[in-house]
Amino acid sequence: MTTPIPIPTFIINLTSRPDRKKHILNEFAGRDEFAIQVIEPVVHQYPVISLWNTIKHVVLNAIDNKDDYILVCEDDHAFGTQYSAEALRDAIAEANELQADVLSGGISSLKGGLQMSEKLFWMEEFSGTQFIIIFRRFFQKIADADFNESDTADYKIASLTDNKYFSFPFFSTQKSFGYSDVTPRNNTQVQVENLFRDTEINVHILKDVAAFYKLRNEELLHMAPVELPENISIPTYVINLPERTERKTHIIEQFKGRPEFDVTIVEACKHEIGAVGLWQSFRKVVQMAIDSDDDVIIICEDDHCFTADYSRDYLLKNILEAHRQDAEYMSGGTSYFNFAIPVSSNRFWVDTCLATQFVVLYKKTFESVLREPFDDNVVADILLSRIISNKMILSPSVSFQQNFGYSDVSAIHNKNANLVDEMFSKCNTRLAKLKKTMKKRRLGDKNNG
Image (cartoon, rainbow, N blue to C red; front, side):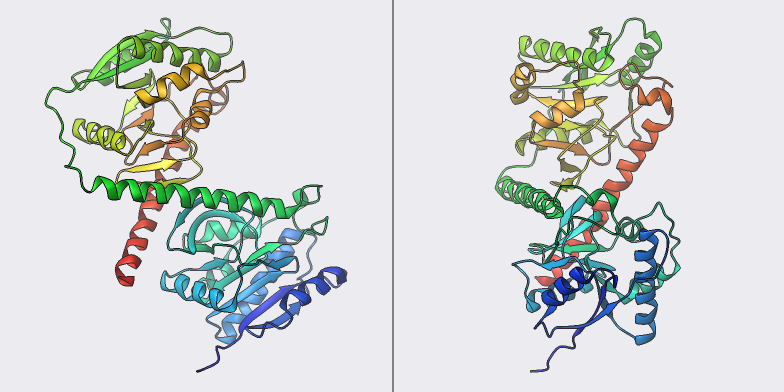
């Protein structure tokens, strides 16, 4: 059997940090799968630029050396209990098949993640460069990238490529030395190990949610496809302040000629704090739905606007299918989410869902909304995200917020008139990226089958 070529491994260490050098050499002791070099960082007045320039220096040498990939380590890397040489080689091979640019052995934060296989995840944004495999196909992009003192190496890498992955369970964490030469926020009493622990918890949640919907969807395969009744009409409650006549005119026009909505204009509750008034209005609508014995309702704010992707059948089909998946809440369009997991071709489970201009609420959530205590700090979309587990968003979306140049609820939108449009656009871009990544996963599943 041929012995694998050791992985070219570059460990970044300041000569003024002998404690870190001793630690990192001990971590790699007896691990013949690595060909290690301890290198001095490229000097710069800004530590973040020093780290980036050092990575860039290593990459430029790797281009000349014809390496297929390299491992860059910081001197606070620590091997996790799940690490093995075989597991690392397998992860590298699998990531390479997916045309990965980078593969992380462990991350301290994550925004946007998708499980690609049992032990490999795609990531959107991350932090942590203490153990990162960089593939040749990404070398030149790093070499050519601009970098300044407001950047960080991990966020810069995330911005340069969509083809980034991490192994799980983590091969690597960071040892806390009580200080950081690069990241000031780690110069606190908070142990950096805790950041990795919290990220591991989030990844386990992603795995559990994906497993739940996989099982649920397998059960649904035995059911007949959803059929749409001819004359179905969804109770739709539109929240409007009487003095906002321009908004009322707008929203009436939006629902004109759409008999699939049984529209009721609901006078919004007034409060000196707009966000509190909105939540009180939500509670008012939910009580109306209970009194009417509604099974499912749509709550709209008066700035809702239908997208070009809206159609009667598309929305109703997704409402009924989401109900079969035990959904409690479905958004027609969101301005922010953190994690999203595809549960059908047009729906994603999300951990957080901001914007309440078009919300589908199922009967099982009604009492929860009314029971939940609140105070003057309440924010409707954040509270709904916290008290409801089975949240979904539609993609393509059917709703966005009309920009009236002001907001009665969110003061920040009065300072940046374009913020709403930018947030919705960014979310749609992120969801499109997730769909693109999903296709890659399915292709891989077919190849593995």
